Length: 252
Ligand SMILES: NC(=O)c1ccc[n+]([C@@H]2O[C@H](COP(=O)([O-])OP(=O)(O)OC[C@H]3O[C@@H](n4cnc5c(N)ncnc54)[C@H](O)[C@@H]3O)[C@@H](O)[C@H]2O)c1
Image 1 (cartoon, rainbow, N blue to C red):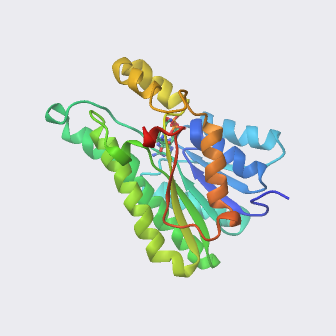
Image 2: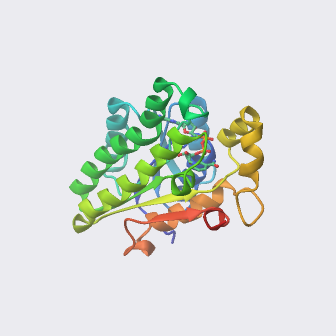
């Protein structure tokens, strides 16, 4: 029997990278998964991969920084599978990097919207559904850039710092109602998003590639292992935590 047998889950940003690995891990462990992404082709591809492996999944198209899309995502879990037990909020877009004194206000605002506000919005509807169901588990995807700060990546780092305290505050708010809320903070993980960033920012890339004390990049599946554990009943007394999965990057 899988760790998530008969659970119903949503994963945002599940079209590629870390989100896809989480959706596939959830399904492998027996969950029925709602895959949400604003890339139709990639989102459907994740669903196809899950089904090919014998799992159950449905794709919902939409931008999770928009309230209508989030409502549709959570409603789809209820309509197709009867309820919502687990959510992982992985979708994020880093809009740009550079020194603060040259940074555009519009880029700062949209980074917050696509990394922090979207997470809050997803939690709002996920929690509503979980309250109706008597409990649940949420894992937000943060970033190690939120822990020590990161030069030239200040908007993203601040947004992810917001995700951390949102996670802890929400855990305090809903623990008594049976909803556990944690975050996983990845180090540098080999995903299409990061590979694109390495190409665009070769100087920053050199440092990032050396971030882990284990001297390698992480793989999306290594994040998915931790998220799956935190989402499962095996983590039944864990809430309000930020778990770094980073090859030791946070202790360097
Ligand atoms: N890869 C890393 O090294 C790393 C490190 C720290 C944190 N993270 C975090 O992990 C998460 C996943 O990162 P990744 O590297 O796999 O990203 P990625 O760019 O490879 O994939 C992100 C996916 O999310 C989707 N997406 C983004 N915003 C969306 C939105 N508003 N609505 C719907 N879909 C949306 C994209 O279409 C894409 O499929 C993000 O929260 C990121 O900040 C990644």
